[in-house]
Length: 490
Image 1: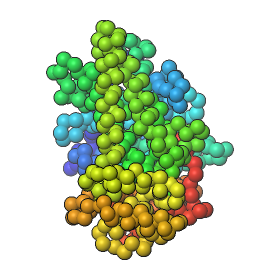
Image 2 (image 1 turned 30 degrees about the horizontal axis):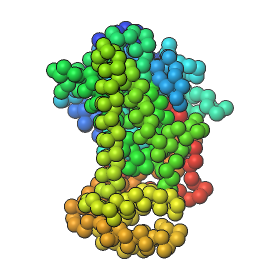
Image 3 (image 1 turned 120 degrees about the vertical axis):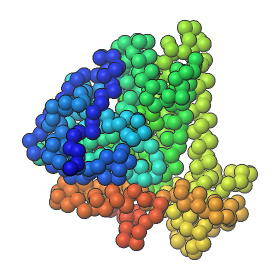
Image 4 (image 1 turned 90 degrees about the vertical axis):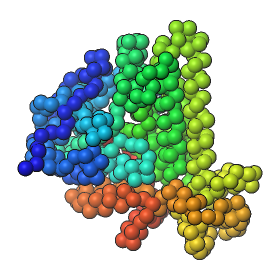
């Protein structure tokens, strides 16, 4: 008989200073129901689905449990939101149930989003909508399928209750989110302001113990931690940008320190390429536009570095110099990762002036021609595999521009199987198209139809190959289908 005990048996954050969290159970809901369970993620964690699909498991994931093996908490943090500092933010509608321990011994956080108000709530009802959690489920699966480090959605639950949004009542939902860690830049900012060096050291030691064990014995482990985090963040943001992803709300409280994509409510993947593209309805000045993300990553890390200075050196000038040195690693890492990634997308391995010129000209050309980012690189990959050039040239408004670019590309590309294979791995055929995601949400919210949601969730697991029955999911939006604004939801 299957073991139906909860696998959520740990709460590693209780070792941190008590000011950094509040013990708190989620708010109960009367009639929870499982809408989606991520079986592939359960397999990755070495778990079967029996407990998760049981009545006991569903109620526990909805917040209806005494949690005998774990201690739910809400976490405190501060943060710069659109450049303005807020001294107390925290989990306003989320509860950390605890951790699952994977077969490799590492812990995975299990957090509920939309599970009720907390001491850190800033207005609102503490709940989420089914539509908002569907969106995060699909985007996180898309990111995972693309090989980009991300938080994941383990399950979606209906609460059986309605919540008020935009002057109407809509179905309530809870997201069961997993992550390697929920410690963020804002966690350090809060600890620095509230507890000083003691709090910062406790958080830094926690990160090293659980996520950067190779630094444990180093005499310079705290500067090395900043450098290691900078490298992860630079690579992450380069990966985002190379698939046209725009996070949308890169506040310091939304920046994970283990290099995972987190808190991406108003995010989107670009359709036609535009370097300054913004989707988020709250990013009115373009602070977090596609082409600003690398700069913001550096800015956020600088705020993180400020909290670490007391751990670097008693001499403040030496501490600042050391921080600047380690932050320099972010700049070089991002530049190399992004440029190399763009060359891989174009099938160019050898570096020379002509190749560099083509790489530097490509994105501005896509913007001036208003070409779909994903469609262009997918079509180019198929040309490299031997397909006809007609479909690629048809993407250009001005045919002569397309012909000239293609001629230049042919003169610098590497024609070998290894390069073509690299292009296939760099150029997804399928992304989570905004209009498809919105259609899946609309179907679920208005008609209780989850068929498109399930279809997208499955297809996005393998974005580099698309089955014949899913070809329609590749199609860019028609004019009337275009999504121009996205919104925070969970």
